[in-house]
Structure formats: C-alpha cells, structure tokens
Amino acid sequence: MTDQIRIVDVAVGILVKPDGQFLLGSRPAGKPFAGFWEFPGGKLETGETALDALSRELHEEMGITVTAAHPWLTQTFTYPHATVRLHFFRVTGWLGEIQPREGQQFAWQANRALTVSPILPANGPIMRGLQLPATLALSAVAQLGKEHWLARLDAALAHGLKWLILREPSLNKAEYADLAQTVLVRARSHGAHVLLHDRIDLALALGADGVHLSARAAAAQHHRPRGLDWVGASVHNQVELTQAQQIGVDYALAGHIKDTASHPGAAPMGWTGFNTLTHAGWPFPIYAIGGLSATDVAESQTYGAHGVALLSGAWQ
Image (cartoon, rainbow, N blue to C red; front, side, top):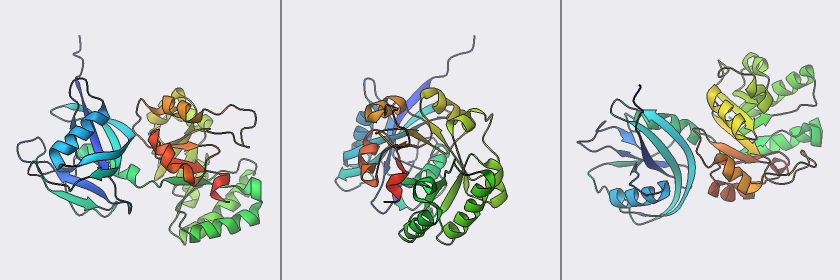
C-alpha cells in the first residue's frame, strides 16, 4: 500500500502597493532553501483558518497587522523535504512598519523586473498571475458595429487598456481573421495583449499573445495549446474549472454574475454562486464576468476573484 502524502498547509501573503509593486522576503539561515526569496507567510496551526494563520505569521515575522486581505489562488508544490499547499492572499492593507523580526531581508519588486534572486520554486509561477490586470476587456463589434467599436478601442488603448479578448462569434472565419489583423496592429502600437477566441490556429499564424477558449473548446483539449504565451478559458461549473486546470490555463472567466443582455432569461450565479464555485481554491486567477463594470473590481476580490472581465462595461 502506498503511503498517503502528508500535505502541509501554508498561508502566504502577497503584499501589494497601489503601484503594483509586491514584497519578497529572504528565507533566514537554518531553514530549507535559506537565502532564497519568497512571499512571506507560514504554516497553519491546528484549528486555524488560512486567513488567521496569515495574520498571525505576518505579525510574528514582520510586525504588521493585516487589515485587508483577500483569497487569490491555491497551489500545491512538492519540495524534496515536504509537499505544501499554499493558500495565497492578496494583502492590500496593513498597519505598522515592516520589520525583519527573523533576520530576513525584504525588498519591494516590480513584475518582470526583479532585482533579487533566487526565487523559491513554488513562488515562481505566481509571478505570472501577477502580470494579469484587474480588468480584462472583451470586444463588442456585434453590439457597436465594427467602425464604432474600433474607434472605442483606439480610445481605450490610449487610456491604458492592456488586455483584450477578441470574441466575435457572429463573424465568419474570414471576417474574424481580417478583424484580428487590424486589432493586433492597433494593440501592438500601445504594448497591449490580444487573445483570440477559440482560434488557436489563427493565433499562432498571426503571432497573437494567446487564445481564450470557450468552455466547449476547452473541453475538447487534451493538453495546453502549444506555442502560445497565454491561454485562458470560460467556465460555469466545477467540471469546467477542473478541465481548465488539467489543460494548464493561465486564468479563467467565471459567470455570469449579474443579469446581462448576452444571457437573456438565464439566472445569474451572483456573488454567492461565484464564491461557492471558487472558494475551494484553484491554481490560477479567476475573473468574474457578466453584467459588471470596473467599479465591481474591489467587491469581486472579496469573493476571491482576481478582478472582472468586461464586455459592454469596457466600452461605455
């Protein structure tokens, strides 16, 4: 009989400044991987919730009192000495000055411009999730018309839009390919990312930043589409979330949260349903979608969302 692997639950805090910088700390001498850099945190004690453990550990290790922390994602990682289940929280509020109470060092870092190394292996993949913005936009050609929407796109890009999913199921393949080429030219001039919807072949041919898969397209995949930087998927239930995990997506969209014109007559899951779907913890960021606006970002994060994905709300 194979021995059951003992999993150690660990709460981890990603302290984030308003400008997006996050805090890394060095592991002190005497611990495994001493000198490696990681997000601060520690093991759950008997009877503790992950949030309780996080608050206690950050106070003990750093001298701060957490005032705002929201669940983000959960990853399981096997080291030579232990298998750990890491419960990551985004920490946006705290009281007190950060102190190295265990002889560690701390450094504020910007994504893709790290000044410290080496990074603890389990924390490396988290950097990828931190590249994702709080809002994703979905195209709206069917609602606004091509020229009107392209004008809105130009304005949004000029005002900082960085991530777009080009989802236009009403267009035929030739029309969609023509639109994709036009959008990619506009987006690249602003350093924005464009993910094509379901069209893996076209994304590879045009050099798009990735692909976003419908739940149906994701269900047909046996592995992560190769050759693409970013892969996302739409999900509506736990089965679809599990499939998204198996094919190795970078993020998922879950909904719909509120009543929306794109799902007439379909009952929304609401925030309670979203929380029920996601609370178990998944190893990738999850966006809420459906009838939302940018003003819903903060509320979405209290339910464990990375942020919100916007269709109509992105172009108003």
